[in-house]
Amino acid sequence: MMKAMSGKNLFDLLAEAVTTMKPELVAELARKVLEQGLSPEDALTQGLAAGMRRMGEKYAAKECFVPEVLLASRAMYAGFDILSKAPGHKPRITRGEVILGVVQGDIHDIGKNIVKVMVQAAGFEVIDLGRNVPLPEFVKAVESHSSDGSEHSLVLGMSSLMTTTMPRMGKVIELLDKAGLRSKVKVLIGGAPVTERFAKNIGADAYAPDAHSAVLEVERLAGQVSS
Ligand code: B1M
Image (cartoon, rainbow, N blue to C red; front, side, top):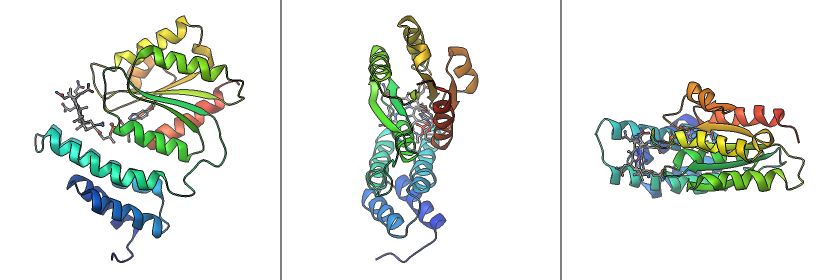
């Protein structure tokens, strides 16, 4: 049985349990976060995401290998499942729709899933297309959700973790243009190699470096989209 502890301690322990690849401990700590009435969003960003970030740094420094990164992401999901289903974590009002996906050729979806939960928590409905999404699927989703008769604003969020796949986000914008749908949707992009400058170059409306900024950008963009 774990004693009550401060949010910061608990979030640090969560991050550590991710980097030490312990799914049972991550789940136990995530439940503790909820029992203590702490914020699931803070636990996601300061605990789970921080742990994965640390794991990413270790991988880049060749201090660990792909199987360990996979085990860490499995541990991360053990907490993610609990925190994302927390009561009161569901959107109370739908402030708009956000189509989200990782572009074709790219299977890195941990960051996208964190963005998804945070955006849902902020009251938006998320249409999750998943990862390795064929480019026309983004266009189809925009087409169907911009003509579904709803009064809500529509944002398309694309994620890419590789320099080889990030130009495909620009391709999707071109396809939206060709289909006459560009004005119906605001485009937000993100992912570790993406920059503000790249976003401008490909004609995206916004860039967010992390999940928290993604929520702020979605809120800003949703206010701009005409229904
Ligand atoms: Co891969 N991988 N990987 N990998 N992997 C990277 C990305 C890499 C940088 C590692 C390296 O070489 N240093 C490198 C890419 C190099 C490049 O740019 N060209 C790489 C590579 C090469 C590969 C493979 C090709 C390896 C191989 O097979 N030879 C292969 C690719 C397969 C494919 O996609 N086709 C591969 C595979 C994998 C695993 C399957 C083992 C696993 C992915 C598991 C999964 O996602 N389900 C994996 C992982 C985990 C990583 C690293 C280590 C960590 C990524 C991560 O989850 N970070 C990564 C190295 C690194 O980043 N240092 C690496 C934590 C996550 C919380 O952060 O995703 O950045 P992030 O998301 C953040 C922000 O970016 C932002 O908010 C999130 C939360 O704060 N954000 C958005 C993300 N999306 C957003 C969208 C928004 C807004 C903000 O708006 C819509």
